[in-house]
Length: 368
Image (tube, rainbow, N blue to C red; front, side, top):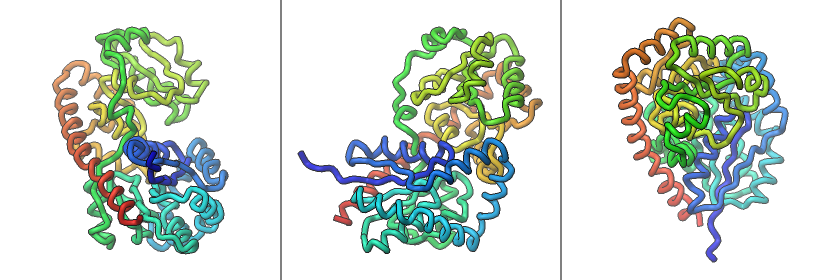
């Protein structure tokens, strides 16, 4: 049996987004390569993110904005290098990969530093994790073998920032296999099995992005639009949310599950925080997205991205949410037109995705 080349994907457990991107790359590459996904950072970094994102989101936004300058980003990279150099060096020495990919900005310059220190010529690829505006922390490292830009906007920003054009590749946004080729029941069958109306207007609502009291009000507002509307509520690991809503009529409280695509596919619209991975997973399923909130600084630009390409709607206030859902319930034409623009964007994205495997194959063959 021929031994397959190994790809090491380094990522971060600061939220699910970087991990989801790493898993999406794994799903697209695992047929040809052996894949290993690792977060080599010390545990306090993920702990800091969980603490701040849950109790002081304003502070996370302030940190994001503060580091969004070339000089401050460079200084941050110097600090992060000190934190990860030992673990990252041991990981690369143990893994002996044919290629390394990063889905996290503070594992970019850090990786190239370690490769130089170890005197290794392993190809290194960066995948931007921003759809609209690339944070300065990504732009500090221009020596990667290849930089993957997931959107037209990030591609142009990389070029404008001085990246070598031949090393920048527009590749579309990768999503996990379950969203590309969902193995799911027929919509009506699934909704019926959940105790919902097979013909009802269904909202898939992501839980836990807001404070508990505020989110409860969001759920009540959606159900208050009319008797024909119903919710699949993804409560994740939030047991209190699950217990609060598990017996509510016209609502199915979905506990944590890794196989979530079939539940999203059963909905008419996806509603929640404007995180890029959930947005593009919705697009992959052909579902319009309703952005209700966002992480300050980090996801703010995503709202304009949604509007620009017709991927859904932005409805942040209770009034906007109620008016939008009432309108969609009364007149399906707006929903149909939005679904068409979502599907058009995904066709373009799928075409661009095919470039990733070709670029990676060329880098590995050139490095052998």
